[in-house]
Amino acid sequence: MLILNQKMVKFTYMALDPNELQKKFLSLAPNKQQEVVDFIEFLESKKKMTNEKPSLSWIGALEKHKNDFTSLELQKKANEWRD
Image 1 (spheres, rainbow, N blue to C red):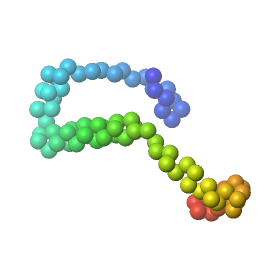
Image 2: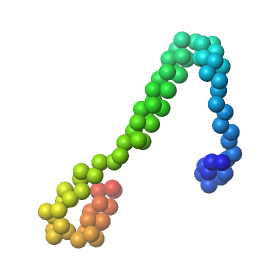
Image 3: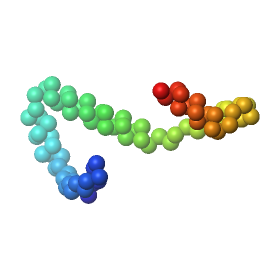
Image 4: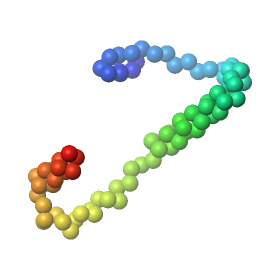
């Protein structure tokens, strides 16, 4: 079950037989085969990105400014930058 835009959507995962998948792939025109390859590579790169742990090297970078601003001042400044 998947929740999408606050609606529950039921879906079924169906793994294709590798031979069936190959038949489908080979039945496509060469330009469509390339699209499939590109999409697979995109999915692989997306998976790699989600497996990376976030870098926290920025922690403490503003330590020297901790007495220059209050949290409220920083919040107001951030809101100005967004506008």
